[in-house]
Length: 373
Image (cartoon, rainbow, N blue to C red; front, side):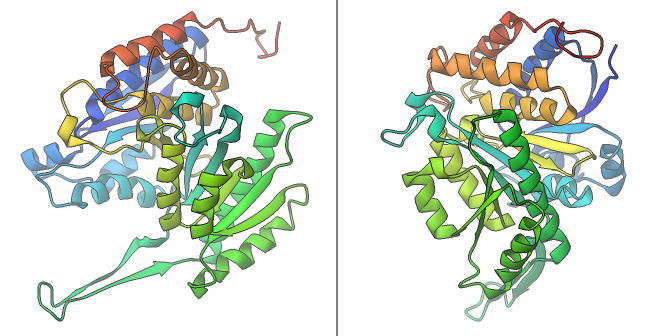
């Protein structure tokens, strides 16, 4: 019997609880098929919880999260709460409190008909964005002066450190190697593309210099560079040129939403917040979408994909592959016709279809050592 994983669950606001339920159904089905065990620990933190109790995340809760193997987050954001208040309390407590310095966002087209780009095939859109997750303008250094007057001043400082830049760039190079190994012989050479705006924002030259330093240790990995505006153009024009993108916190936030559109929409996009070897957090990136909350119409595929990413991080590679394959079959067959809220398919029905595909999967027989029998 394998060791049971300790998984925290924060359903959150809006559609968060709805899509999280479907993600947990997929988790249970994958566990049935592959045989791993887990315990769930649910946390109430959300805008609704704050309105009812006035409670935000405390350091004690962050310490508790550190004892878990992973955290699954639904969505945070409530229209009746000051914008950003609860998001900072929950999401930044996870990212900064646990130093989750990698924001990992795969961009992979699973079904050709979902892509808004003319003439692009499934294999043309398959890359990963590695976004630095603890620095830049998200470090919250700044403030306001003379708020609400004609003389109001707002100042924010972007922070880039050698340590923070180096470790996320190194992660991107290691990931490129790992992706190349997964592709096997005959696959494309691993490549990492640095995306910045160092020509106009000169302090970002630290990214250029550290990137060159790290690249020396990876002679087998091809390197490339694009300014962020050009990167967005290339993502639309020639997305097949990318393998692994590494970029700043702010630029990563922007280009990954474009990436989500390329793969069909925000309803299928998922992300991981990672510090290798520590507790990690996984989430769909679509937000709480309060206007459709409670209507059973939100796509659960982002949350289910986040569960797949979580299993991959935990070392449950079979479970992760089974979930991704189930999502792909549902989309290619058009049993799930789209990944948005007007697909005509209920949230629960879409989740049931994915679970059906997971349970139909036959896992290869293995020996006790984990090798093919």
